[in-house]
Image (cartoon, rainbow, N blue to C red; front, side):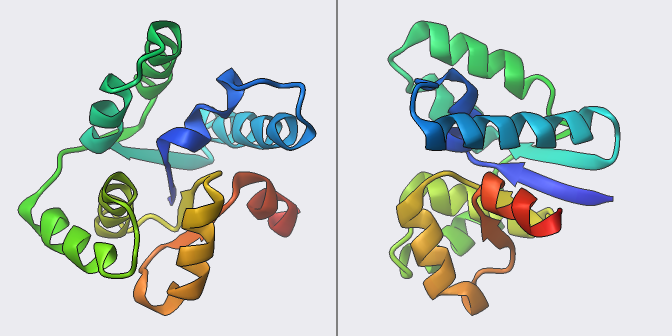
Length: 147
């Protein structure tokens, strides 16, 4: 089964200001991918890092909407000591804490794809692609690439 991990900024796209073209297109891509997951074509893997990151969201409405969305994850994984060790390696590449946790779990879960809308993370992942054991892509770019 094709396994996908979304970071929180990617999952939040449908709740962002849709008047910007980029945000609207990325939202459509995220929704399309979620439809494939719902149809059973792909599997959505998440982690408790997503829940922890979402708890820090000051926007209560957005936080609750993301909680509802996270309830649809096919497999929710706990954080492990191995993840924490891998996070240290990823931090050494300049990847921020929560992003590093998400990538570490996606790698451990043998996800084929890690989706993010974070440009900084995308650039770092491209720069260090051989050291990251999961493909890191923007959802729109990835969908365009497989069409």
